[in-house]
Length: 173
Image (cartoon, rainbow, N blue to C red; front, top):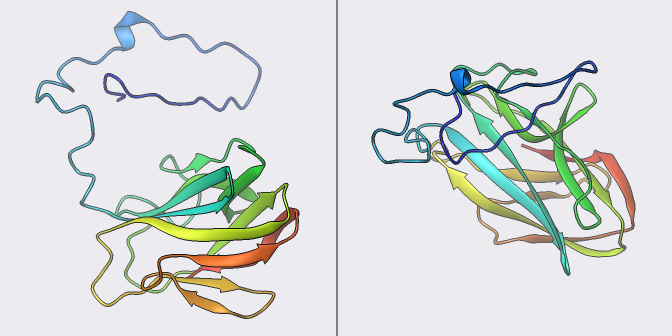
């Protein structure tokens, strides 16, 4: 169900019309006065961003018991370039703004993608980390240079990049 004040997108798989009726509304979902999910701290998530001067884009990787390590209803596709910058995780040749995987019990490697329309120094940053298992670190790996950056202990990582699309250069580990 979608609570009051929450938005969402619909990705159609065929031409047609999406119709919402009053009968689709759910009552009681806001009876506690909270408009945001109360279970937000109960699952592990990492929000990463990339920025250059006035351009900024972010993506989220989450880990939940009910998710699968594949595409499911908890994932959200990345809709396109924002201010000349597009940052996303990748799975099965699809770009995701939110990629939710199964519970984080073992090390996982997540392919990242980046489309940039401006040459320069791009700053990678962890915007948020929630419920990360004790002692676990998050690494950004540059497959081209073989550099591995510990994102858990550094505030940000700056990498000089030329405009283009990078779908095989970076992974999150």
